[in-house]
Image 1 (cartoon, rainbow over the protein chains, first blue to last red):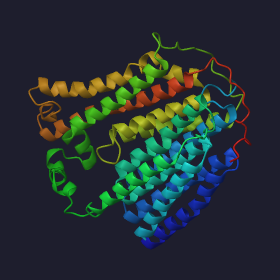
Image 2: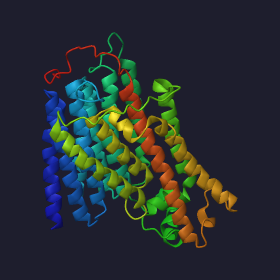
Image 3: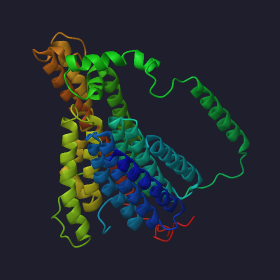
Image 4: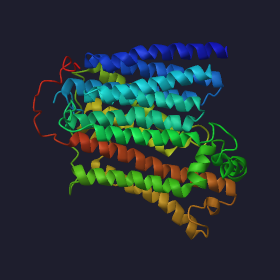
Amino acid sequence: MTAFFWGLATFLLVNAFACLWRAWRGPTVVDRILATNVVNSKALVVLVLLGLAFERSLLLDVALVYGLLNFGITIAASRFLETGRIRGSWQS
Amino acid sequence: MDTVVDILLLAFLAVCAIAILRLRDLFAMAMMFGLFSLITAGLFTTMDAPDVAFTEAAVGAGISTILMLATLAQTARREQPVTGRSKLLPLLVVWVTGAVLIYGTVDLPAFGDPSAPVHTHVAPYYLQQSTADIGIPNVVASILASYRGYDTLGEVVVVFAAVVGVLALLGLRARPPRVVRRPVRRLDQHAVLKVIAKLVVPVILLFALYVQFHGEYSPGGGFQAGVIFAAAIILFALVFGLDEARQVIPPRVLQRLPAAGVLIFGGTGLLTMLLGGNYLDYDMLRESPQKAQQMGIIMVEIGVGVTVASVMLLIYFTFAERGRHRRPDGNGDDGPGGAAE
């Protein structure tokens, strides 16, 4: 089973390079935000898989941080994209 | 398999670093830095260092991306290339420094070598004695807060000094901005976002408290908890607005909290001195040394958490507040299509 987890993690990481390419080359800002978001989710799953492979449930805590803070990054980036600023209400 | 994942992670980091160097769009660079931190945290995990991975995930990938975006909002979107200067000398300096560093790694002991100097000095003592001295499973927490308490106090003071610097440069006013009380806005815009944020923010706050007070048993502690706590408030401010966030933590209180955290840390040290021990020697706090150590660690971690959380919030608020009454200058490259290479 451990080999399966490692294989899955490897597969996800190889895929992540496609997202990295998208984040590098763009061409639009939305591509970059989405690519970051997807890599974040991938990293979360890879952490869970590593936790299963090492049999250390502590890594789930780290994965939780990814899950919770990912939301904040995406909101901050899209707010910056929409208003050019990063504060205040959306109406301003 | 371990090696394959390591190679993939390192290759990802290398591509990321080259991309950051090549890019001129600062927004894209901020996102790439976020990616870099994410993958670095994964690398720390494969090295079996969950505490460090935790910090990297919370600070590197979470807060610093948001702070970089906040900085970008104050400056321009694109980097201006420096022209008319010779690139030969900088290139030479970089190559020579790189060569010297690579030459230096030749003498380093192999990764995980048990006879390396770092594993033969005080580390075995900490690992063997931690259970008897302090009795908590997470040795990192006992080293951080008890054995190396002075170092951690120094780190907290550095964080405090950082916020003093930011405030001195950017936004220290004689009177902190007043809390504007307004009737709560209806969910007229971005209703989905606001509802989701209302669901997520309490969970993040709860998780921060778990990280803070469970740090003796699982990875975590004051530094990580403070950052996660601040991230929750920043998320709230992003979605609901700065004034609403001020009603949660008034600026008057927030400006005093970094000092309060350092005082809690330093005060614990003074308390142990008053009780007849050395500075930050927790054995005097309770009858049983183990219980005393655990109590001291919890007190110190609270100080760390308060300082870090309030410093992150203060930096974010200072950046977000700046230029608030200025009209945006309307150069039109903020639009979705304006980020071509």
